[in-house]
Image (spheres, rainbow, N blue to C red):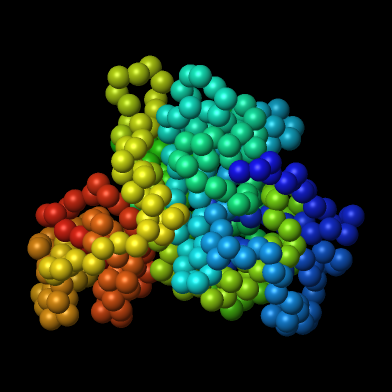
Length: 418
């Protein structure tokens, strides 16, 4: 891949677009916000009475041509933490979050891959293995891109880089984020200024609490558990953007924009992304984390990637490889919470009447709804059919997990917890 375009850091004072994107901006709702900032650039304090005019301008904006001329785009989303010196957070900092976002305009779908920051790889031009998040400390976004492309054999078309200060500011502008905290979270790092003190339960997290929720990883799952919470946070963020009053929060969101983002996306790119976002069924985004295992034989704590399974995920979500259709019935495992005890047999029969084979159903304490893809026969088309059968189930998220098995070997697992 040729050299990347030099990153632009736009500021309102020089009449160029300024914007911010939360570090885990997997959802296209956030991209819509980016498009609004173009129209806010000449007047950073917008009165509510002007909101409708701005929305009309977005809808009437002429579609730019070059961005989606190849149908698909892969954007790298990188979150960076402070380097502790109150200086440029993009210099000498490790990447705390690394996400690949793949979009297809033909199918109007979005696929997401999270790369564990402790993944053991060879940094481009280096002869010794390191954690993949070191690439940013050694050579910034350019070396990060080069390392990912070389390691996984993919092309990255564009990038968005955001520092962690943006998280708290966006949550504050939105008036908090609704999250069902699954476990007690307690951790104090006085040197790092991190105080996490959360109790289980459904609650609205303020900006400080949200940061703690996203950064907590002091449990058995470590960084992998943290990434799953990030993915859950993204879904909660998406719910916020579905609210009609989001348009009236735009001025506050725009005020957050400024030094928190670096990107090589142009104004035209962002406008086209926003228009594409309007056509995407966001609840059907497929999300996956590169599979592997924590190292147990080395002094450094690595996430050792499973190369075969990683390639399968990349083929499936980045290259959009066509999956085979199964000649025998698609198999399901069902996990259900107390809420579904009385209806689980009816649900099981519903699936079986539609030609699916339920291999097992067991109770669970999980409080979320997920549709997990396990095998090569777990196709997106079948997932949408399964989801359509569960019309009263809210927020059934699509997760590709090639390892998880709960009560038997199956193509899909459906978790009914909400």
